[in-house]
Image (cartoon, rainbow over all chains, first blue to last red):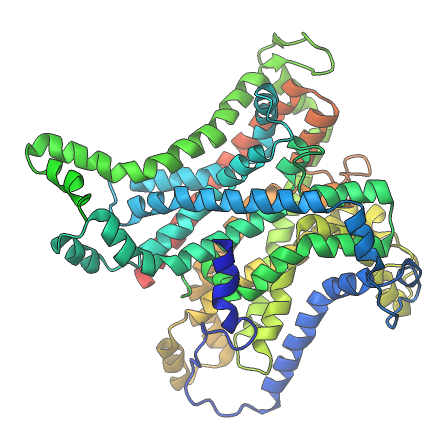
Length: 298
Length: 311
């Protein structure tokens, strides 16, 4: 599922996004003001991104080049720091992160799709209450639940087990996913559904042939957002896992305690921790916008 | 497709049972998600309430006993708790407001044709994608480090010495990292709003001779309102729960100067092992959140019903 998210909208990644056709018809070439605002946008964009750029640059430095004042801009790049991060054993953490992220995302989609279908296409009374309930679970601060969760997980012997994270991440993303998917399901033309059932199409078939094509882009958007939140999650991971099931953010924290504050090495580790999701988000930018705006932008 | 039969046939005969059954068929797809959400998210809260009435410290096994509201009395007389609660409010409100203002400004910059627009948007959304732990690490070391940090380097022409930003201004430092991280989110939402503006209305306003600022205030802002509300509510939901950034940058310190409620409760539960106390704090936080969010939910609901009308 995440593979789809990664690859499908690749074409529209960096070029002009398909979401913005020229809206305001023949606009006179507006003087220097426009150019200046364009330049300002570039300055702001680069300034905002600069910390990340610097992090990536530092990751390719020798420690000696990382600790200089004023900062070194020109240096001979090296992969030594990345090798060190690998040899200090980021591998299993990466695998845990991938597993928890993909598994919980699949579960979220499996649970949220029928739920969104029910609340949008075949609404019953109390649908509003149900939606209200879902989003309200998101309002309750996680920290208030962590103590009993810890006690129960400990009691059933699931501490430091990756499935614990899978279940919790699923619950964490489910409400947002139901809301997002609902907005996409609402775009399914009801007449088409009725026509299909008139023709004697089974529920399953009309789902597959009428509903799925309309909602699948929204599904991908929802999945992407679940992936981002799960990959980056730290609170549950740090409290409920130890050596076996710990994820990449936990590795990063442990890395500092064990290796000390070596800028270049830390930057290499941070770059590797962030990279998968950053690339996914870049490639599927339009999906990101679509999902976060709850379908308000097609 | 033969599997249509069982679904279609039973609905026909008796109308009374049929409609009840139909109701359940309609509800059925909802149930897995609903049951899952109730078990995983709601039951723990009930247990939290139960624990909050106990005196229970994990360090002293067998110390568990019913103490009624004692824990709550302790929470409310705990001056640290009050300070931390205030930090929570400051962090959340500050980060939401600044991120929204910046996000709106960036969105306005991006909502126009210029060379490399897609690329600039890509740059701007990246802080939202970066793992918060990595982002916080980045701010703490590469940017805020007193000797080698970029901030002090950039400010050095203006006479800034080797200020240790994180220890001198812990709460502000955390807030800056959070604003950096959440501005892209606000920007994406407001940009979505800007791009969904009906162009004919804008055109009409322009033909009527309205100036750019008047158009922005009279047409664009009202249109953006529900996107801004959505951003504020969703941003607040996530920002109230901030934990990783504080854990990474300051560990809540010095003292509890930069601790928010999640971090403080974490300290009490996992470093102090005081289950009863931390559960009581959790309940207090939940009650406070419910009060605030009933208001917020009303907003979000209005936003969404509005969204349906236009889409």
